[in-house]
Image 1 (tube, rainbow, N blue to C red):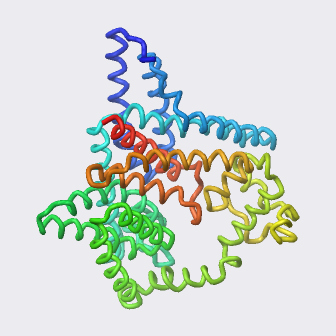
Image 2 (tube, rainbow, N blue to C red):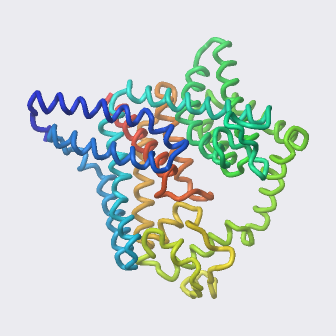
Image 3 (cartoon, rainbow, N blue to C red):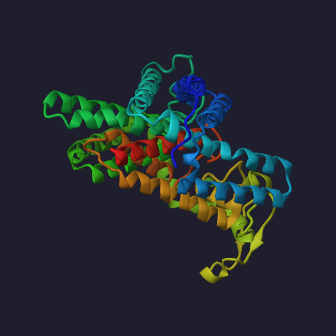
Length: 424
């Protein structure tokens, strides 16, 4: 049923709430750059304003979405697991978890419901990405960024940050911020636009390689490969970029030895000895914890709270794994560095199934509305979400900012763009 008719006063007040929400969203990406606390606060404010907006207009149609019902089930499983463990901090975190999904649906149904609003956010992401790229090049060419910070100790470029976070942040901004402009330029028939698009693409890829963060670089090329798969016109520029990137990596021993040591030598060594690497130990600890607590999990922050407890389990003996143990020496951290392992240690296998179902629904919504030729922004949001939800990777914590902010902003943005194209 359509929403009930509201009074002129309520409609006017709802307009003020929308304006306030758009202001919060406009500065939200920059808070994701520099402040976990403010980005989390602004995401919660946007969710709260959306609830007030729904109350004023008496519009609750958004609650009926299938993916939101699955999100409610997932939050309920996390809460039950946290209450079962009995640690106060865990169930308090679980009670706050719905704010992420509320922020997501607020973007989908409210702040990004129009094309103009979505284009505005794209331009903000483009501006933020160019700022990040400029700071990386300043640090590479002069030795310090604008704040006077040098490279990180392992040779990584930090860009506008004090810690090595430039690679992940550029990855987040690359597809929704840079790539829509690249694709619009490439579809033009004039050579100058095609060259400009390739130059912008080359600038972003070159910067990512020189930053020297391995997983971000791998996921960037994965996203570009997916773009070439769904958009034939991009395949020739992608081939040229691959050739240039290969030449750049071959030159790294000369132009940036620290990046070569981290991006090529250390990465190759980690792949050859993954089980003995830090990430391998974290993954093994998480699998052991899930095997011992498959149905209830260990609640929010369960990995941090219990990874130091020695575990031995025969739960996976049917797979030929006789005894599975966690490594309490090197297998402990604040999270297991993988979204799906973190969800499994939090809410057990039922929570993992619910989360996988959510990821599948989000990606399916984007895929069903895919039209790269006419709607490059929606297509690049689809690619960005595929990268974020790709399971075989090392990641930051899925429920913590800034990572949670990027994930739920892009998902809400993707569903908004996809729903708009279906209506059209």
